[in-house]
Length: 143
Image 1 (tube, helix red, strand yellow):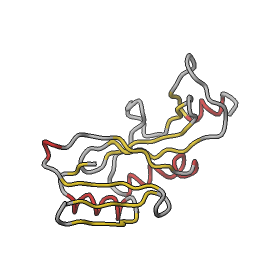
Image 2 (cartoon, rainbow, N blue to C red):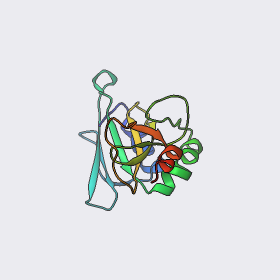
Image 3 (cartoon, rainbow, N blue to C red):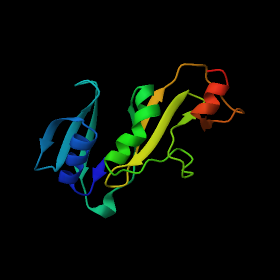
Image 4 (cartoon, rainbow, N blue to C red):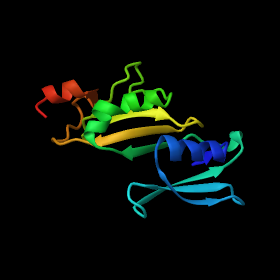
């Protein structure tokens, strides 16, 4: 992902999201972080001028308990605003019935859309069922 200020982004991904930094290259103004276990997946950051930054979306796999019960408080404790997929002002994770998965969103310092997501037990519910619902609605559907 392109970022405007590499040091600010390193601080965010390392100290807020607690990702393990695995490489930094000052000459190319880039930094890399392991996602999950080392060598499992990686996030790369490259510093670019603001006008060259294209906003991206990235989802971080989490467990259900964290997304459901702790994610919003975690984000608030780091002065980050959480929002759901509908961006309707409710700061509650929502269920994507077609996966099924529970998710909450927030932004990094450059405005990239980040997501904490947890895969749920239960059967998928493709269209015409509602594709995004509250967790309470999901439970009422028998999941």
